Length: 307
Figure 1 (spheres, rainbow, N blue to C red):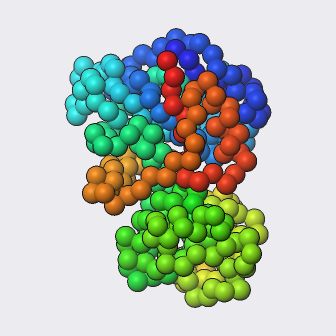
Figure 2: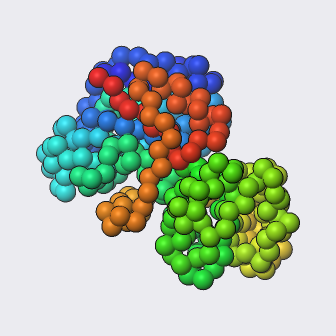
């Protein structure tokens, strides 16, 4: 089979599409024929080697964590799944393996996907939608009636966070470039601020929660818009800490199958849009990595396995 692998840390140019032995399921695993995978910022960090102290890898390493596909083989003692099931899941960061034509996956990491969900839509969910959910309702403890600011509303995490927050009964304020204002409102934003032409920190005060996938100056200015007891959830700064009476929390999503199952149910109820930017074939996977590295993707960037 084909797999996008690295033999040393570096940039997308170091990733090479190579032949390797097909995946084989061990005890408690299924072999999944991968149809689609999504690219996350974590994949670029794994590629660069900055996550090695936390998620060590051995070379050659196959990139990618989020995938969707079809079960081809399965542990005969497994329950709950069968051959031919359409599934979505997330591989551990140290294991990798999603940017390939097949992967051996722990059965506990899999969820079935409905017939009306495409493989591309499914692959977009595990990390981005899961992170949005954890940031809002885990670290952020969002409840109905609160006011939340979501930065990067048109991005992978942001596009899901806007929808989840609106459905939870919050007033949703977002930052986005002018070209994405229409999308943000369609997803449920009550108020949209063009971050390129307006300083959100000069306009907003007394918010309950800020979700920040941007970092840097955006994080620094976000402190001032929160009320006492409010929470700033950073998706990029592991050193963030409370400031006075304002909470600062870092969220790093590592996979949550029950949460993913719940998100799929929201999709089945036709209450979730999955925004896809670009779909790249596996033999152009480098371009997918480069697109995410350059920023400003609208929704999710997808790799479609080619055969």
